[in-house]
Length: 281
Length: 174
Image 1 (cartoon, rainbow over the protein chains, first blue to last red):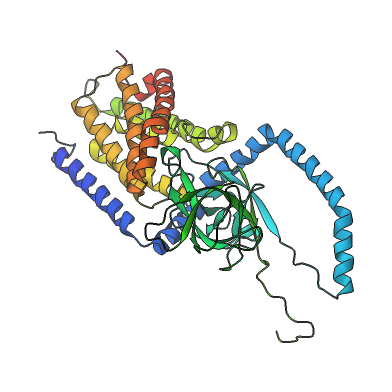
Image 2: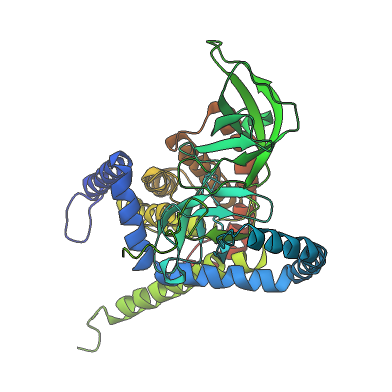
């Protein structure tokens, strides 16, 4: 029998410690999501804050070292687009002033680097090196240059967790470009090798979508503003009950490859401005 | 009195051993939290936290290894909050299994150590996916493609660490 320095049965001690650890892990698995979200956010902003800050710094260094060319190229093409759109924006401003229409609400954003982890569940939730200190709040939508990525799941002072479209709990109300067909997007395992795609559900049987149609956020629900591109219809799925049409949508953004994100902070399009002359606080 | 054994020598040696092992772990943590993310990202990258757990597990008793696995799993669950508790349980099982296997089966051989790192990363990924409620189709793709790739990269780095720090880690290589 193996004994420790104090002469106790070491094997029994090991088994007890193992059982306690497994028991605590099972308790952790059974905890409600609200508790675990608060617990992980607390640990991230206290004990693991140095690790998160170090990783955020590493992500910034990587961007500066390896992505500078791409950043410059996208900035150049963006400045060209802005120059070409300047005339149209001026016309738009004139038209708005003619009918006494207030200017569109600006859509403020905060940019951040994604901190990836070498784990198979990484694409479902991502960590970003920005938080409430930069103006982020829970449920703020997160986008990349290509389209919708997800929303802020929990926000700490210097880091935040993002729930991406690949998470089983993701839902987004969506609409086609012409505004004709509405539906609800949710993740499904449907691609080759069980790859995660989105399913557009709730489309009425009288409506149909062509393959290749682009799907946008509808603005309903109050989380995502209207008009963020989400993905493209790639195939039709069968509804076993025959009550609705279901379309498979290939999202534009791959969460596993996302490195730089924009978090859209309030106010959003769904926020109502006070009426002119309204003096109520 | 001169030939009385006071025990100071071995205690001092144990302390220096612990300091050397702690230094190796600090190097691995720096690799995990700064060097790897500042150079390259993507699936299949070596997992230095898991490597730290396995290196500590083969030096400690199974109970202590389970406790270290609990801490490593908690860190991973906090930094990758897919399903809280999945990483904790997976790493407790991996830590305990590695320490138990080391005590019962493993020999001091470089290939055996490499195999331990490979299987540890592979099984850990499958356990985490299973406990996170991943679909069977996705699980199959991960188990056959990405998990072995990460196991391989972790094993390669692990072998390099064992060769470089074999004296500090007190690992005999036959």
